[in-house]
Length: 272
Image 1 (cartoon, rainbow, N blue to C red):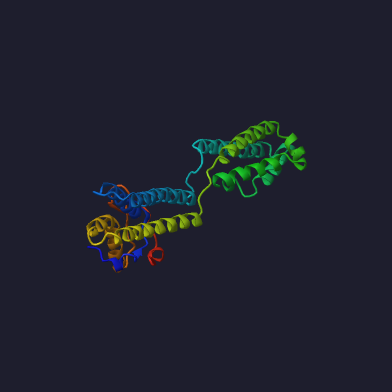
Image 2 (cartoon, rainbow, N blue to C red):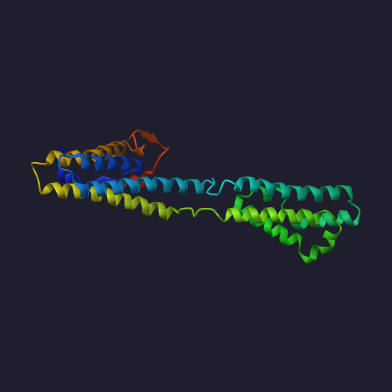
């Protein structure tokens, strides 16, 4: 049996554990001999909120590891822009090699110095958005008035710059389709809302069955059990001074660091 005066001390739940516990409580509330719809609705809403928060955490992590929140065509366009920048650099280098002591060679050197002051790799190794912006600056410099005489000495360069600009503009259009990445504050607010809903669910269960005790104590404990089992597991981990593993929100199986693992500081507080 659950002891009522301990029920408002809940550890901070990893989000997968919360989704699993609240989902089970919601199902149990609808299958009691006397179903309790308000509890089922609140617990179900909390389970849904927890699953949405797991998705938010996944987006946050992917955006902070440089993985794509971009449309799938961003990578092939990045490769085309890389090829255009590399081709321009190779063309200028070959002109310098072939015509080093002529006006054409001097023009190639001038363009290389202006467009690639830090070398080729400094541009093509940039993240998507940064590279797009660097290439836009490169093109503006290449087509500036002060380099007009140098361009005139390099007959193939204008067509190459036109092609690179077209590729880079298309690249920029795709990059602008990027989804807004969540911030750490967004994630923290979502976690807090989930924990508040968990606490509210426990409070609603206790409050509802306080009007019917003791004849429905077993029903009360039946609805609390999924939450309290997870709470006790978290407590055991904390007493061992380890970060509680998260669980699969569907099966309840522990998944370690693959889910919503949090630091010791994140887990340190209790919610009432």
